[in-house]
Length: 313
Image 1: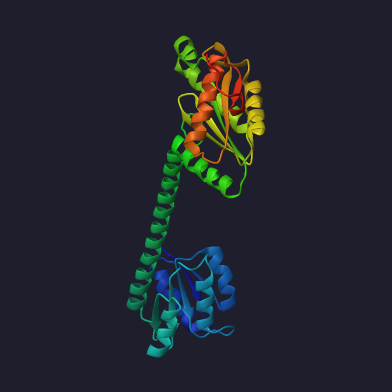
Image 2 (image 1 turned 60 degrees about the horizontal axis):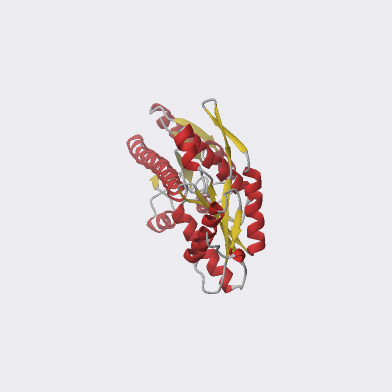
């Protein structure tokens, strides 16, 4: 059954209420001090509070207001215990959030009915809160799936373009530098064909992790598709972009990966572009991709950048 907190200093009221409530199997806690009730209510989280409008240490109206201001107690229904059903006084209590009232003389059928409604209201609110929490968690998981690449746990292609577009706009507004790096696994098709796709997946996860740990917190690292990983480096020029790309290349060079007792070595090629006045994110990615293709054509396991131009191969 329900847990009821009685806040009342009148002994006859307490005895009668306890008798009625315990007959119905409710758990009852009593305090004669309104101020003590705040701590008890926070600790016990009762299903309903029966609050006398007259208390020795604080007015019932003030007590009600304090309860409803407390975020831990705001959802607990409060039934006011009144000497009469004065309409003007009732209006004040309801305005402050009282759920219901019971006027003297207290009668078992009335008390039972109003406690039943209050407890049902509290249980409904609890179920609603749980449903909202589950919905929020589900939405959070859905959002994570939408913006995150499942295999590498980097941001997805769409999310990368969204975030990088914002960084390009900021760089232009504040006249800051910005670099884009495109990193691609060398001979991924060879890995997949000779060792299986699970080895290829392991290669991508390894490359993604090195890119993530090598980049700064402000850099955006995302998977564009297949084996291509893009890094948007805000407040970084071509020299800084090339330096990061080279650190990634060096960290991955001859890295050994394994799957099902098979081993293989990794390497990556990268292309780097730097923001120019007329650029948007598409042109930056396209130029970095062209430099990536040049790095592949020149033998792989290398970094090529805007300042090197494009050789005729």
